[in-house]
Length: 222
Image 1 (cartoon, rainbow, N blue to C red):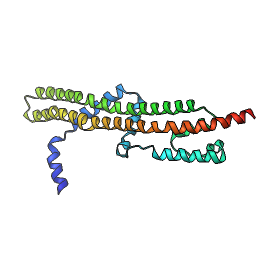
Image 2 (image 1 turned 135 degrees about the vertical axis):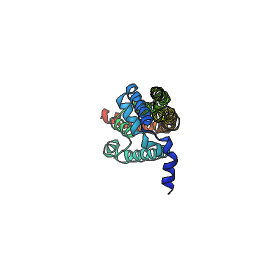
Image 3 (image 1 turned 60 degrees about the vertical axis):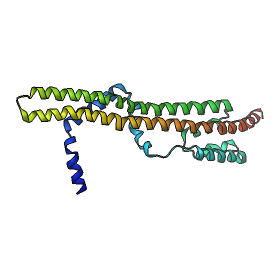
Image 4 (image 1 turned 180 degrees about the horizontal axis):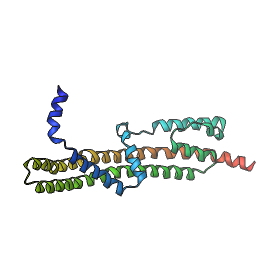
């Protein structure tokens, strides 16, 4: 009963022609102005919206555990460790190869910045959709008005054309302000929060490298 009542109340606001113009036009405009890899990231980023805020605590505990393994069994034992996070894995691989602390720090920092840029690029796709959707809505409005003026001699067609004109503006505003813009804002916030948390990884990874560099120098001298 509630579903039927809701469908009846929303019925006047549903128009497939207006939705096709605004939705299809917005998607087309975003595709034309966006690189395909960024477009894919924007779609793949949607599940991130429901996740909890990123925290580096678990990664810090793993780095500490790796440090204890290296202290007991040597740094080469880290080469067999299973590390899910790619940034930490790359840094540990550099430590195993005998990289100096400055190199490890630069590697972690670069990967963090690259990750942030990818996340922000995905957010920009949604920001672009929020920017063009109202404009596409106005295009749909103009199309509806043209159809209405052409159908002045047919009263039954005037209502259909007017619905396209009015609902196109509504759809453009809804897609831009209530869907795309909030998604872009949330993705930006999540990217900033993750980048801030990942800054905490630099010091312990550099400390691990600093502890292992003297050992690598001793092995090289021997």
